[in-house]
Image (cartoon, rainbow, N blue to C red):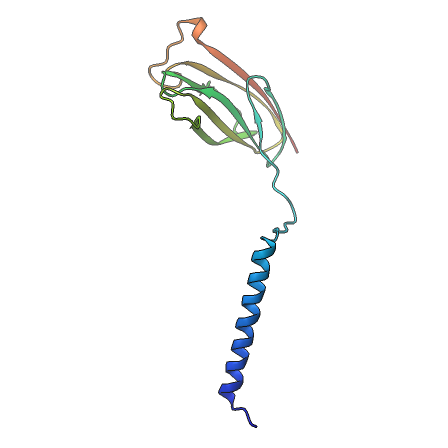
Length: 155
């Protein structure tokens, strides 16, 4: 019995298809295999009014999380002059509402920074009516909240 070239190729293709299908079925039944990485990404540390001293290494990021309610005029804003951009830079400024269907529910304002180079910087955030806008009102001392953050970046 002789095999022509087309028969051999067809048998080879069938064998590859069967092996691939069998391997895929085995992987599905065992669940996904973990992806191996050489270095796990470090989680971003979160700071706030009760945790204002930040110490990170150059290249790392950190987040400041502050409760805010966008349905009111009371907002958070970074006070001038802000953090030293040689030491840290703002990479994300976002608001996330609480996961609720309630009208008027609040949320959290997130400021994420990247540590650029070794050094220290200090800056404050203010929570007031219209903070950071041309409608800012700072007349009522009971309505104003300020939080100062001390940042140290290591080599």
